[in-house]
Length: 347
Image (cartoon, rainbow, N blue to C red; front, side, top):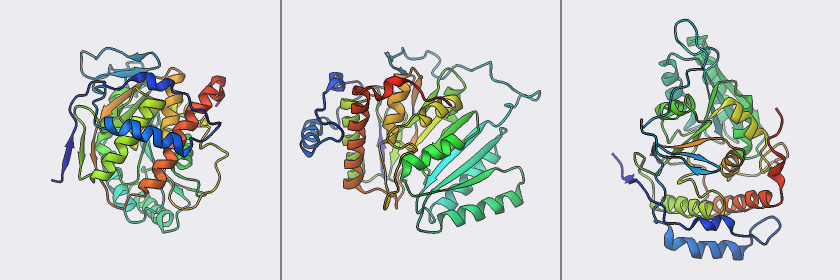
């Protein structure tokens, strides 16, 4: 067993008035502002934050902790006569860029797990214009899987290379399941963790996001620099945009279909106008999704999960951190300029 970062239950010690910080640039944050925020947040990197177990986030803040310890059951969902969910139950969206090494093993684990369940599913791999054999390997895996099990649904979408945010958006809007999960291709949060998220979507929550922080969460084998980078980024997120969340960047999030369609169709940073890019591109699109979700009244549940560090991740600590910080600033500036006041985009 590798090194474990355990996460005790947290209490808030960050001044949430930071959400009202005014950014005086028209679009991007200047180097001066980035240095200023970095100088401010480093001393509080390991400050404790809100507990995430048993809480639901809305625009109005935290609701009281649920006494049952788990989500309520939605008795209104349609079922067949044998008690199984009616229609396509779960879609799993996997964005992939140059993942020829890790994706086949991930797909094997995902398909094996989903075939063991008593609900219907589909898996959608969105190739983000990979330079390697990611797309051909995924297509061959899909063909082999269909020969073995004609009921299996594994779809491959080839995108131009426009980055992870655009790839996730493509898959989420193509998905047809009642509930839609997107996960990084390495499945650092194992597919089995989806059960923790689904129980809340079946209740009163519109969105359930995996969290590597809070009681019940665990990080395995994560290098210190990655952990530090994540805490710096998340503290910046809390100060500027989303003080409610302990972890916005875990690549393991699930949505009800209606919420997914509305939010991803409405993205401003990585929408239809996204340009082609060069090289791996990790972005802060998660922040815009969650920001819009709270602004428009969706209920979001942060769920502690197990997370295993995977070598070979397409992350550039300096370049990607800077890009994501700019994305946060853009989201806040968009809101201040009234970009999001128009409401959800029509389906």
